[in-house]
Image (cartoon, rainbow, N blue to C red; front, side, top):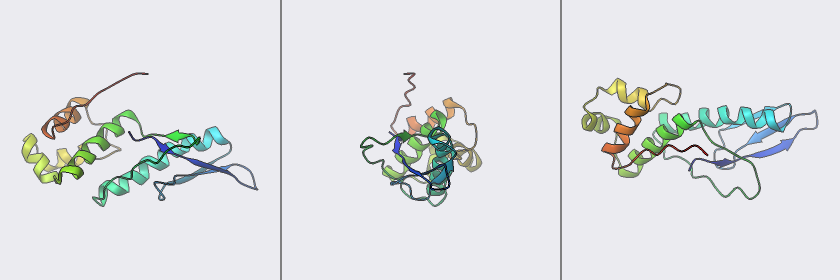
Length: 138
């Protein structure tokens, strides 16, 4: 759902630059392809935080077309799913707080990608939005 294709470009001075065609704010580099992809996760998560803070719709991942893909951590994907459902339904944070019976700081933390929210809180938010949280190990 949040698997974004990454373009890796070898640099003349060595190393690789990783960019995301769907998330132009995310850019990083590494000494080799593996390191660039590892750093790409953090760059993607940071860039997606900008979308949440600006209350913008999340970018939609394009087809990988043979490129490697990167996704945020599982917890952050769950948070992004809640945010995306809110955006699609036109629900603001205050309304989500009202539906959950929470205070605004709780909702702010829930949507903070760097905060270690509990899965049961994310599941509760998804439920009041008419969604379910599915966890899978593959």
